[in-house]
Image (cartoon, rainbow, N blue to C red):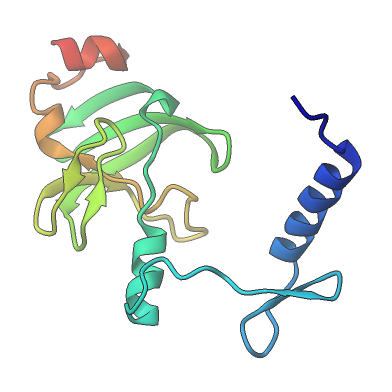
Amino acid sequence: MTKLDTGSVWQQTIDLLSAASEPLGLDGDFEVSGRTCKPVPITRGASEAANRRRATVRSWDAQGITLIRRHDPDSITVCWSDATYGRYSDQLWRVCTARRSAVCALTGEKIRRGDAVFRPSPNRRHRPANADAMILASKLDNLPNAVVAARLDEALAA
C-alpha cells in the first residue's frame, strides 16, 4: 500500500474548488495555477443546449423529505432538507404537468414529459433552490387528505 502525499491531495482539492468558484474565461475554460481546465462534455456530439438541459436534471435525495401533508388533491406541504440546497419546512407544492423529463424526488422513478407531478409553488420574491424538484402525483394518490403529519415511510405504506 502506498502512502498518499496529503499535501498534493489537498492542493489538488483547493485548485479544483478555486477553479469552480472563478468566472469562466472568454473561451469558457477555467484557469487553474497556469493550467487550463476544460469542462468535460456530458454527451459527445450533443448540442450545447442539450448538455445544459441534461446537467439540470438532478437526482434528489428522498431521505431529505421527512413530512408530507395533503391539503387537497392539488396541493401538499413538504418538509425538505438537503445538505447542498438547504432546508424548507412547510413548503407548499402544487400539482402541475411535467414540462420535461426528470427524476421523482420521492421514489427515484423516471418522470416523463406530460406526467402529473407536484412541484414547489413559485415564490415572487425568490426562486427556491429545489424549484426543479418533482414528485410523481401518482405516488401520493394513496395519501389521504388532511393528514396532519405523515412521516414519509408511513405515508407511502398507507
